[in-house]
Length: 104
DNA sequence: TATCTGACGATAG
DNA sequence: CCTATCGCCAGAT
Image 1 (cartoon, rainbow, N blue to C red):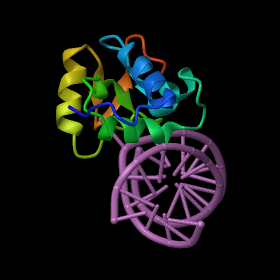
Image 2 (tube, rainbow, N blue to C red):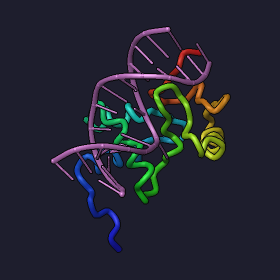
Image 3 (cartoon, protein in one colour):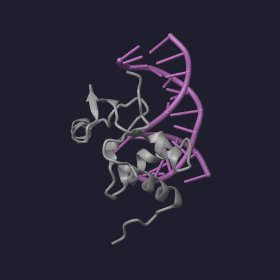
């Protein structure tokens, strides 16, 4: 097994933040990067979620406008709804405890 | 080392 | 609300 090879500190911090997400909580890539102490590294979060093999709650992560992941919208919407998150038109409109809170 | 790509973000139209 | 564009950063080629 050669998993977790190029695991730098940043990746470890980002993973830690993502793992801390609770059911019904939805945050943006930028929020995760910021919480991990890497402001502006939102793209690193997306790349991590797309490339890692870790069991992370990827469906609780959306972009800054609440848009879901292109290509996985259906599955993501289903998972979020099962956690009580309202999704309309492929976008999160409301989260229970999320830092992402668009104006309704 | 140079260039391209993308699960991003903010702004302008 | 939508797309277009630019700035950003880490990986891939």
